[in-house]
Image (cartoon, rainbow, N blue to C red):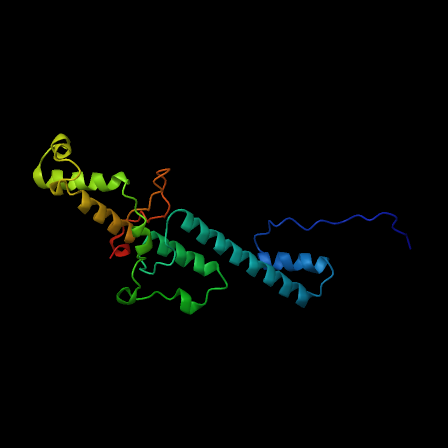
Length: 197
């Protein structure tokens, strides 16, 4: 009987077989490593389950990074449709968690009262809202509005600040860092009416 003097590792077969599943191919790799078939199949299933869960978590993180609220259950917006697809591949999600909640029982959208309180008085969006409202109501020009002065009640500056705080609280506008002008909180840009009802 010949003696082998050198160890030659064998790599796993390429995963290009269209007639075999990932579970079958991964099971074979565990078998080549010395596992019994039953154990190899169990290890392969556990690893694929872990991969599916990680993939779902990555997709949810991507949704949040795009400003979508993945906890929305309205059933009609882009985030809800994406979340439904993500839940299908996540083995940690049960069927009761993926069941759509009827619209009349859907929870209210996030109310960011603490964010509204942080809206800084130098946020120029308040003045722009006030100017836009005054010009729509009166038909006046920007110069006409500026001539009123910021302390004139007719200039609607206080109203503009209140509207801005309300928009931030309702998550329609982001909270802005006054030092950088950058948004601190995300907002959904989805215009599906069912998302904002």
